[in-house]
Image (cartoon, rainbow, N blue to C red):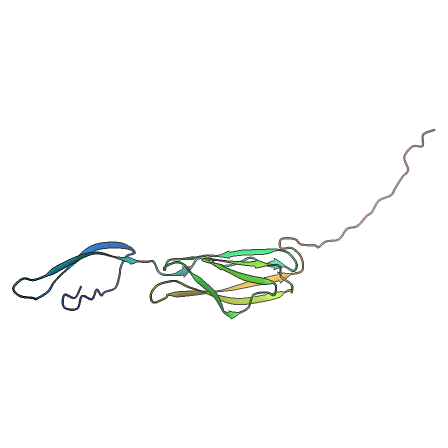
Length: 159
């Protein structure tokens, strides 16, 4: 702390909250006046997006994905800064981001999400994602050949 200006400067090396007492004394004569205050400084971890990918989906099937962030100062604000979501999907920004809806078109959709925190000087982080929307539910594969090579015989006739 600079005793002349009162500025607290430097580069934090750890996260956490530090509490301290500041005392100031003026230069009045003959009696110096003093005041003290208990203060604290909180250093937050750097803001990051912790979700690295989102699932693929299918036309007409309900889609839900969650994207999380950590660090910084909550609440967070989310936005798409490039690209677009598949038609039918929406962002639900409630600190944790939810992508939900029912896709209406097939294709490959690339987009970049940005999260911004609530610091006095806001920090932001971004990450790119891809969602592939197909025509059948994810995880199902239809392929192969069915053949029949046998004979049918009638069973015994009862009288």
